[in-house]
Image (cartoon, rainbow, N blue to C red; front, side, top):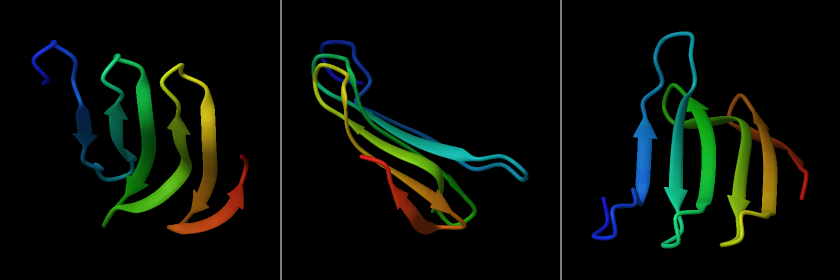
Length: 72
């Protein structure tokens, strides 16, 4: 946790049959990055990067750890 009380980064390990996630926040508290993974941190589903206003600036979709589509 940063001095201003905001969480800078958060990890949730993947449990059997579920996805884990990794999230980071900008200093202003807006979400900066989120990605989901399973197993040995292989991306699964969407990886999204946001600017400080909360707008999506990059988004990719993964299946079984492989990039299958760049959405933005």
